[in-house]
Length: 191
Image (tube, rainbow, N blue to C red; front, side):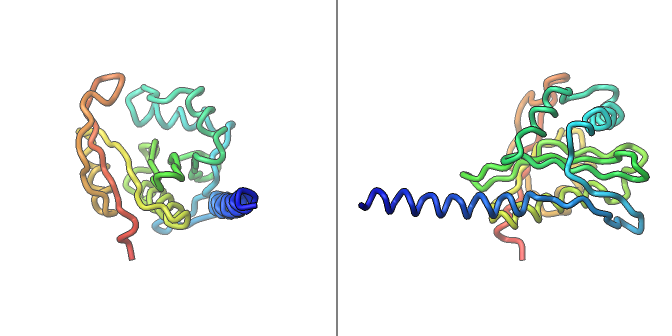
């Protein structure tokens, strides 16, 4: 009898957790205004991958750190990944992705990039803070990311948002062996 109750209770709790997660990850595509300019925010889909790769090439000097297959795999993982895109006049101009670990309550930003012509317009800030809001809704405790040690502009943005340095990952980046700065934001301390 106790086993039946435990099973029932576990299913009830699990179902509520799954429902909460699905509710907060169900992004409705909509217009957003960022610093006086209209953009369209949407959940990334498989057909967005060529444009995402185009932004990677533009931002990373012709390189694509993640290829079509990697993005395709990520976008198909609906329960523990969230990828968003920003469009301006139907052009994809920025994207962000994160992995969601429900056991550790960690939201890890895996990718964020803004097309060169749209940098310094608040798009990166908007996307990162949108992911932070989602993590808070999911009652996660932290948001983490890695950033190249040479990318001081991105580090400044992350620090302005509240991220702090949390160690170094030596030889982290595959193509050039550059180190990565690990950064963390404790979202339990955000008011």
